[in-house]
Amino acid sequence: MFWPMLAVALGFLGIAVLGVLGIKVFLEAQRLGRQVADTTERINRAAEDLENAATTLSRTGGALR
Image 1 (cartoon, rainbow, N blue to C red):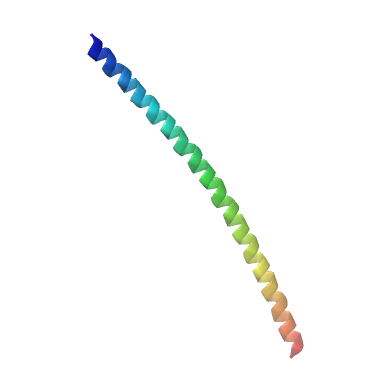
Image 2: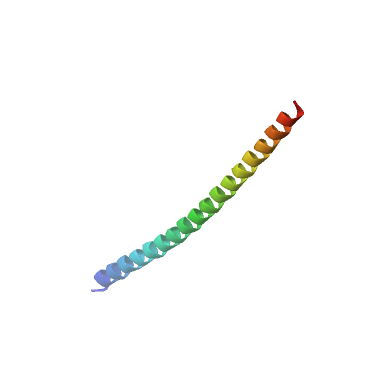
């Protein structure tokens, strides 16, 4: 009777550990997703700034002609 109860307890413990690890993975994936979104926003902002600087530079170059 001891061994079947031990097997059930260890099985439950294993499922609980997998559940905790699954939650950790889910939370880290969400955190990574937020970081990717923030980085994408920063890259887009930098690209817009670069485009504006290039436009200003081309106008300045055109005015020098």
